[in-house]
Image (cartoon, rainbow, N blue to C red; front, top):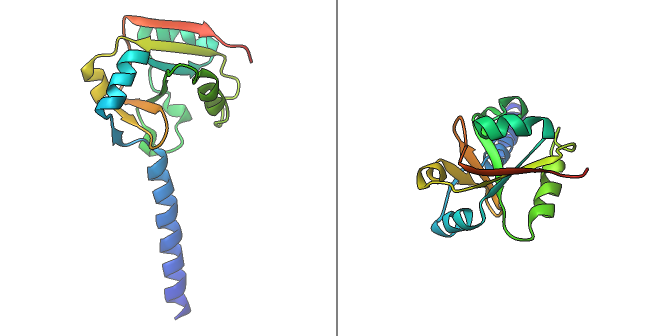
Length: 147
């Protein structure tokens, strides 16, 4: 009897943890309202200033060394650049593991429908991930941010 209870508890804990992991990874397709917002306001990607030059040359490339799980493979994390949301988005990024020293932002505009089709939105946030090898447009600008 106690073995069955132990197995049920282990399975429940595993299911709970796996559920949290799935919830963390954005899987929600981009809605039409979100698509319009991305086209109007663009996206912002936060990074280290040492990475700005390669990003401007090659585009935003997923850093799989910083992924939290295998579910995040080939994901580039960005935010919709809504007016007035920059400081909140920056604080959110800097609160994440290994990102407190990010001191640059890359603004991405001019995204195509095909690029947006390769994006997902995290539930109840303006976090947008691009799933694929590279996210690049002809309308990318960068700025440094004070720490």
